[in-house]
Length: 293
Image 1 (cartoon, rainbow, N blue to C red):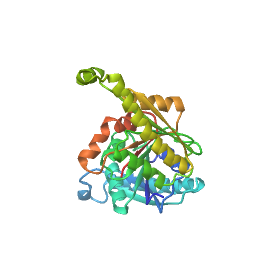
Image 2 (image 1 turned 45 degrees about the vertical axis):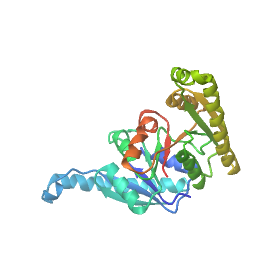
Image 3 (image 1 turned 30 degrees about the vertical axis):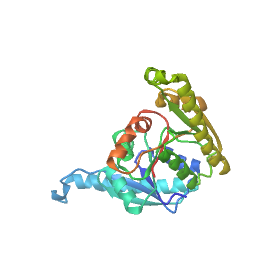
Image 4 (image 1 turned 60 degrees about the vertical axis):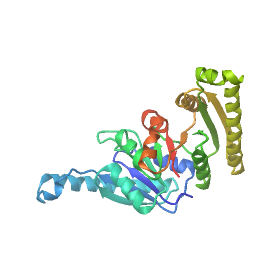
C-alpha cells in the first residue's frame, strides 16, 4: 500500500487518465487527496478588495470547488475514496509543497491539454513535478487505461537503485497489474572494446555476450519476485539506445504503462532523470510511472 497519494486536478478533465490508472493498477493508500490549484500572480495582496482581479480569483475558486466535487464523485465510481484540497499559487510548487507536508509517496497527474482552459499538468509543469518532487510520479496520458492494467513495461538498468524501485512497486501491492516485462537496452562501443581487448585476446562480441548473459540473470531474479507475487513477468534484452529499445517494446506489446526508476532525492540526482526518464515523461505519448525511493 502507498502511504498517501496526491492527485493533481485541473479544470478540463486532464486528470482523468491519472485517475483511471490509479484504479487500473489497483493502488490503494491510507488516503488519496485530490488537489486543485488556482494559479495567481504576484503582488496581489496590495490590490484593493474591490479590484476586478479578486472577482476573477473568486470565480476560479468557485470553479475549482465544483471540479473537486465532480472528481470525488468520479473517484467513488472507480472504487476510490478521496479527500479534496483547494490551493492558491504556482501549480507544480503547490502540489509538491502539499505532497511533502502530508508525506505522500505518489503524485498522480494527467498530461494532456484539453479545451479552452486546458490542463495545467503538461509540459513545463509535468517536467517540474518530475524533477523537483520527492515522491514518485504517475503521469497519465491519453485515456490512461480502460479497466485493469493488463501489461506494463518496466525499463530496467539493473542498478541497485532500480532493483529497489522494482521491489517498492511490489510493496505497493498493485492488485490489478497482470503482467510486467522488464526491458533493458544497452550499447557497447565496439571500436573501443576491440582496442581495449585486443591485447588479451577477447573480442567485443564476447564482451557483449557476457553482458547479455549477466543482464538476463539479473532480469530473471526480478521476474521470479513478480511471479511469486502473482504477476506474470518476462524480460527483453536488446543492444541499442535504451530510448529506442524501450519505445519499441511499448509499441510491440501495446502496454498501457511504462515504469522507470528515478535517482535519489538530491537536486543533482533528480536532474539526472532527464537522460532517459524525462524523455518519456515529457516527449512521448506513454503513460509513465517514475518510481523514487
